[in-house]
Length: 195
Image 1 (cartoon, one colour):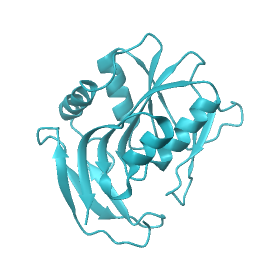
Image 2: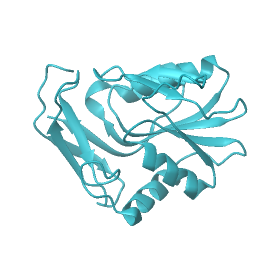
Image 3: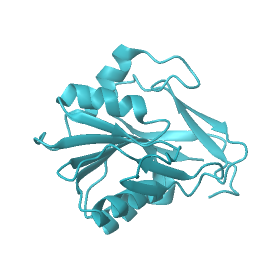
């Protein structure tokens, strides 16, 4: 994956009704050569709260029914706002990973984002043992990050009831790997193939 320089992409499926804007740009200093930018998190372009709400409502419509102890988990950086908005829509709690290890707190969960050269570790501090987790990502390609998180969550006794993403990149069979590892079907709003 890291040696291929992708130049463009095609949209296979877009259930955002055209609200999602996607751009492919080069990534510098990482194992992955590309970066997917969207209009959702405000890091590289301005985000519009109304659009984020509508997109999260669309993904919510295909997620399992809300449970009493549900927590939406988002990963730093791109999924933090998304996890908050989805939790607000569902009336759930949310928890976000951080790239910073706190010496005064014991991390409940630690997992890696393998395609990152700089700070690949994630730490989740705010989960409680009874929590039922929905992992919510901005984009999934190989599925390795969510699989690593899933394995750690299960190792420490957490229930993972769904894995969802705004964008699925089909080139790397992440959907298949997630299903084989977790027995969960990946829930996505948009599917693209890199060219």
